[in-house]
Length: 78
Image 1 (cartoon, rainbow, N blue to C red):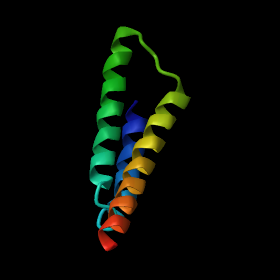
Image 2 (image 1 turned 60 degrees about the vertical axis):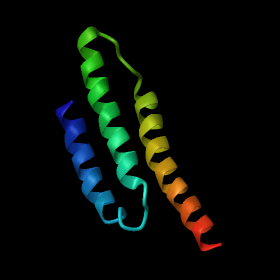
Image 3 (image 1 turned 90 degrees about the vertical axis):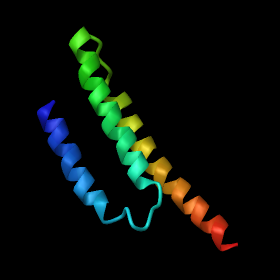
């Protein structure tokens, strides 16, 4: 679990530069961090989520926030 948190920290610094271009990326990162924290708490009760579910949630949150930012930015230009 600690390696997952360290990996997310690295991902956060990687995406930090893109936050200025994408308006809702901060919210997407926040949702990912909440999900990972919840997943760590749920594992205490012997409930395990498959890795593919975690990856799907992370990728969909980040890509969804980026795509939503691009969509709103293109709408405001018209």
